[in-house]
Image 1: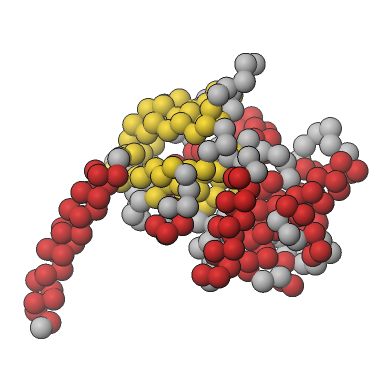
Image 2 (image 1 turned 45 degrees about the vertical axis):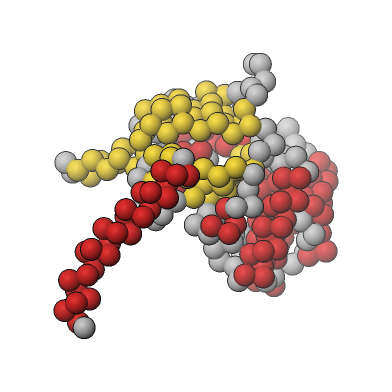
Length: 254
C-alpha cells in the first residue's frame, strides 16, 4: 500500500451514544489531519468530546459515521481483532494513570506490547526495551517495580512502553494529570524532546499551559472542532449562562 502523507486523517466523524430513547451527540462532523512529525494538542471544556475523540483515534472505540485512515490503513470498518492488531503496531499510548502492572518489573512492563507481536524474538525485544528506557532516562531502573518509583518515573516508564513498538503516533491522554507541577513539567519536557527527535504526538489535555507547548492546537467545543476565535466566544457565552444560572442562588444567600 502506498505510504500516506498523514499519520491520521479523520473525515466527517460523528459519534452518537444511545440510551433508551435519548441520543447524545458526542462528536459532530469532526475533520482532523495529523502529519508525520507533528505535535498536536486537543483541548476543550469537560464534556466537549475529548475523551471520545481520543478513544476513536486510539481504536478503542468506533465512530458512528465517517472515515478514519491511520497511517495508510482505512480502519473505520475493522472488526475488534483487526483494530487490536493495528493498534498494537501503529499506536503508542501514554495514560494519565500510568497503567503499569505492579507485579512486573520496569523491563517487563515496557516489553509487554512486543509480546503480542509475532516475529520479534527475545533478543530483539531486549534490545528494543533497552533503547526505549535509555530514551526516557530510566534504563538504570530496569529491575525495579512500579511501587519503587516516583510518579514522574512511572510516567517515564509508561512513555518507554509507548515507544518500544516504534509506533506511527503517540497518543497522550492527560499525561500530567496525576503528577505534581515539577514532574508534570519534566514529562512535558520529555515529550518535547521526543517530538524534536521525530515522534508524532497527539495529546489531550485540560491544562492550557501544556497545550501551548504543542506546535498545533485543536480546540473542541460541544463535539465540534472550532477555531480559536469561535472557541473563546463559545467559552464566554457558556460562562455567562452559568453566571446567570447561579445569580439567583447567590443573591438568596447574600
